[in-house]
Length: 213
Image (tube, rainbow, N blue to C red; front, side, top):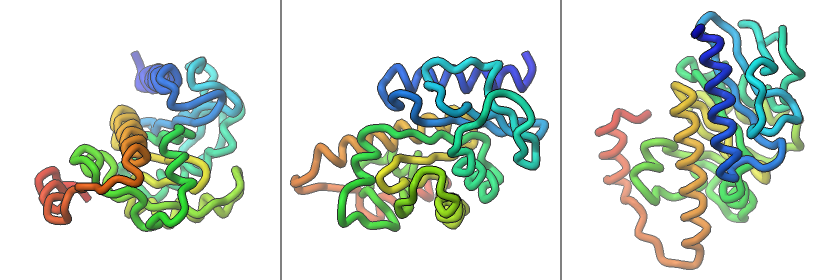
């Protein structure tokens, strides 16, 4: 199997998994993968992640020009904002998952780091999660806002919208966005309860122990 075929099948497999578990309703959410030979594959517009046809994925060349496949998602710029700033990014997953989106709507969040360090796995897979201000879907200013954070953060939360997560592989991007969603669920469940979050020292130990940026 070629690298291209593996990438196509991987996107379809991950999309189906996310959809079947209710993490991306309707035709929301999109996935992209950087190709070893240059360029990207991305899910098309108005397609459910639960029913992706691998042969019809949008194909971009190394300059970001759409060269084959169906019309790409209108949120393609979110993916390119990550890729341009993160040379290590091999995949990007953007979801409208319920709990993360709910957190993005809360008032009085810390825009530099939306959720506390509730678990070691959140620190390891997500780290700090900044909040990107609200922009209408497709607004080019949203691309600039994401790009401004992407070099320092592989995961961001779009206000009133949902998470965008880059990974060093498609699996890592998937695992990180799933950990983000589970932590958002915990965060909402624990509202109005006293929290025993990880201490700064415990977080620093995790960053050193697992060589986290």
